[in-house]
Image (spheres, rainbow, N blue to C red):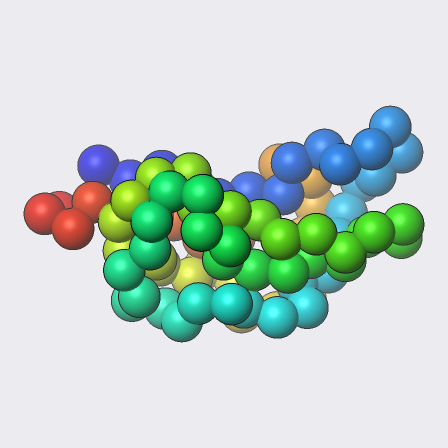
Length: 79
């Protein structure tokens, strides 16, 4: 089973952010709560964490992402 990684709403007026740097590589095994990517909005830079243990599948390497947009997935290691 997979779980989506997306940009959450980080403030009242935040509508998008920019992927600055991936902290993990596509195919890496990650743990729940581990930082995956740094995203910058107009006000802050934040790290988005893995929602569960599994294997990271990056869907978008760089660029702008909208709030709610899925840019990676965490796949169970058995899938």
